[in-house]
Amino acid sequence: MKLKVIGAGLAGCEAAWQAANLGIDVELYEMKPKKYSPAHKNSNFAELVCSNSLRADGIYNAVGLLKEEMRKLNSLIMVCADETKVPAGGALAVDREGFSAAVTKKIKENPKITIIEKEVDKLNPDEYTIVAAGPLVSEVLAEEIHRFIGQEYLHFYDAAAPIVSYESIDMSKAFKAARYDKGGADYINCPMTKEEYIKFYNALISAETAEVHENVENPKVFEGCMPIEVMAKRGEDTMRFGPLKPVGLKNPHCEDKPYAVVQLRQDNAAHSMFNIVGFQTHLKFGEQKRVFSMIPGLENAEFVRYGVMHRNTYINSPCALDKFYSMRENEKMFFAGQITGVEGYVESAASGLLAGIYAAKRIMGKDLKPFSADTAIGALSNYVSNSSITNFQPMNINYGIISDLGVRVKDKKKKAEMVAERSFNEIDSMINNEDL
Image 1 (cartoon, one colour):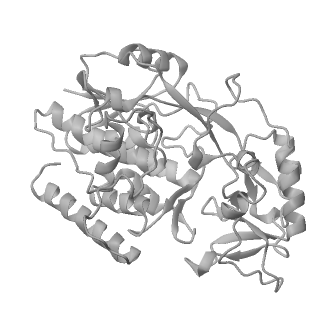
Image 2 (cartoon, rainbow, N blue to C red; image 1 turned 60 degrees about the vertical axis):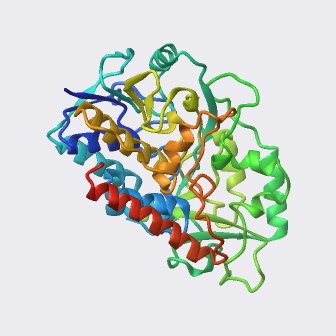
Image 3 (spheres, rainbow, N blue to C red; image 1 turned 45 degrees about the horizontal axis):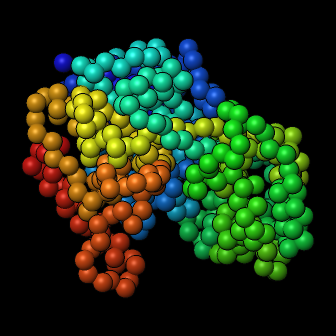
């Protein structure tokens, strides 16, 4: 019996990989290159639309813990991310093109996975299926999912940051460093005086925005990927407590402490492209060039890619899904990725990892054992299936949804180590007992 996986993004590729490695024949449906969403441009699988960062690495951050769990569970996405990583301080960032190419190669070389380049417009309730079409699901499939699950969609708007060429950055004004010297001089930093910041702030809040793909007023924006101009309008100093915070950095060109700092992160292995960290935006392209060129060091920046804004769609998962990412009313139908309400590259892949394992186990007629909220990966599946949630919103992994230790630990580092140890013990136990 085969498994149908719809969508070759991070979640879909991870799901297909996990199921195939358990011996299941997988048909992976992908509408590219015949059809593209408004935000996708590359024909490869697992395309990174927004940032090239998979965020903090190491067990002292919830997303870092999640990544370590996924490494233990033989995650395809983590293998490819580790193979294509680029310098990013304490974060795990990847060469955007190299990462997608690596995932595509491994998927295409897996003998248990058949690639079908076709847009899916119908769901068969009698077929084992994982819908991992992503938050930019095509209109026809979105309508079919709506018909199939019988509930209203929710949605929010997501934005991508612009990318500039390295050679166009004025390094006589910018400097290389990581905050608090973590990870080496991995970021390019553009320091601002108070006068420069105020001029930039005023230009930003008055700049003209582009129309989003759907003609709506006051689109809802996900807090974790907020356009920089929306953030700026919340107050003059909001950016200085966010992506433009000047702490932990010393400008070698000037003894005065920077009033604000714009950071750029390496976007490819060739060191030729850098994205402006935290500058997701939906300003018009001409306005991006005008306003962002006010940043010291970027006066003559060549914009390799301008920022864009697009609609992200997700279902009201607590009403529809159980903790195995399958529908409560149809155990053959699974969902994975951002369409379930998990937010972020790593979280999307993690949901695909579990959906792929659970779907394969169900096809093989084996009992399913869920991960507990003592683990980060289990906390995510518990969150999206929590039927007591009345106002469901997309969620990144965080310690707030992971089970509390039950004991008071003042040292944050020690507490993180204890949470990680508890998590790894559960995962190791499940692997040793062949519950996965």
